[in-house]
Amino acid sequence: MSKTIENIAVIGVGLVGKEFLSQLAALASRSSSTKSLRLVYVSNSSKSVYDHENGIHLDAWASSLSQSPAISPSPTDLPARLKRDSSTSSSPREITVVVDNTSSDQIASLYPAFLQNGIDVITPNKKAYSSSLTLYDQILAASNSPGGGRFLNESTVGAGLPIISTLKDLVATGDEVSMTASSMRGFAGYIETEALDVCT
Image (cartoon, rainbow, N blue to C red; front, side):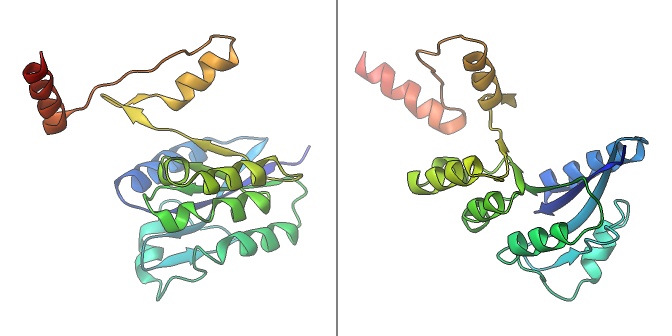
């Protein structure tokens, strides 16, 4: 049986992106007879590195990125480029995943294009799921289309507690969620408490 190659494109290398790449390097260092992780793209807001054929060394992505002269391909061109390079690959089992570690509306607006090209999207970026209903509907339609990629997202509350996957798990196991409640943190929470005290 041939190995599955997982091509990973990372957009955004701030705190979250750097930590993700660190964890990816640790995961890739464990040998596997069935799976191979390959970083093919990494970008920040002004530069990018792309190497679909050989991959970008996970211990050297930062120096490769700093030496890059520009952002090429741009995130806008990335869906078609990843699709083209994956379809011409000699590997029979290849999966491509985009990990968006930004909080960019522009990157979020590209999710339908990635998904339509069969590229999975993983992100903590809330913009695609909390902005326009039109974008959210486009994401669902692209993901549900024949050959469409999957999208996985997460958001946290409180002290970093995952909320979206927890709610999905509850619904998937037959529980009915009738209400969710939360409270604001920090100064907004103080104002809310003061307003409630005045009203009572």
